[in-house]
Amino acid sequence: MRYTGYQYEEKPLASLSLGCMRFPTREATVEVIAACREQDVRYLDTSPGYCYQSDADNSETWVGAAIQGQREQFILSAKCSTSNGGDSVGEYDPAHGFSITTADQVRRQIEQSLRRLQVDTLDFYQLWSIHAPATFDEALKPGGWLEGVLKAKDEGLFRHLGITGHADAAEITRWIDTGCFEMITVPFHIMDTSRLEGIRYAREKGVAVIAMNPLVGGLLGSPSTALAAELADLGVTSATDMALRFVASFPGVSALSGMRSPQEVHANAEAVSALAWTEEACREAQHRFEALLGKADHVCTACGYCMPCPQDLNIPEILKLRNYYLLLQLDSAARTFVERYKWWGNSFKADRCLACGACESRCPNGLPISTLMGDVMERLGDRLARVKDTP
Ligand code: SF4
Ligand code: SF4
Image (tube, rainbow, N blue to C red):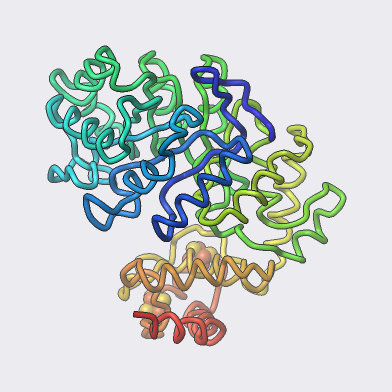
């Protein structure tokens, strides 16, 4: 295992951490966490909203059951948010941990997490899902989120404070300059290094960095012979290997992966344990990966000019998944499309395209978008039929 150099109560923070949001079942949670213990993956990031089915069945209760008798082996983190999961404050949702705006509410949330996890204290408590400055400011208001958590920290309910969200590098700097946080969790992966300056600033200030979405939301979570051939001289064996090695090569950064099986834990541990790349090698891998994607028959530059679509289709994201599937032969891209088709409202239902042509008249690359929507459905139709049949 590679390590970040940080440690908490004698427990080292490895370059691989467990995001507790994708467990399929309570039983699988036990198996995944046992594999993490074997690989020295100790940081567990859970929330009240992950895998939520009921107060008795959710990520926190499953993790609580899995760590029974070995609590001290793990760096345990829970969280709640001032936001509604998006850019604004919504209606107080204690079950899932959203829109928490008062010191009393945050206290209830911390106590709920302790109860569900069956522990007396947490290692980390996090201000969660902070994507916009307004929800961060909300947390700092007198009588609000921060006041409540600092009181709970003084009373020993948790030891360290962290913050997570999709804010940009400048906003991350503002978080760190409050001096309140010992850890940040932000998106950072081979396709998005826009927060690198914020990450470097965190390192300078001794703040640990957890990289969210290291596999681009699972998109790079399967083998790709095309990618392995293209990057063979860099020692890349799969898309997952490339993506995790990239993130883990940055000093002090731990890749937060939502692993669902012991096999994934072992494979990911092997990937982060490989020889770290230099910054130059990271740039080279990134450059060649982008060049490979540039060989697509229809290159979408994700400019977004085609939007909005009257049928609410997320055209750039659908085309991205199509290219990953075709060009990199990534089974995970097809799987991601099917999951999004099923769960993400209308935005990935490419068969809703009316061929109205509104998007095509706005596309600077002249892409035949309506034809490509049909092409996506044709190539992935079989999989969708199987998923639709699943109760
Ligand atoms: S052609 Fe299809 S994808 Fe394009 S705007 Fe019309 S409905 Fe949306
Ligand atoms: S306008 Fe064309 S290139 Fe830009 S996001 Fe839409 S499809 Fe892609």
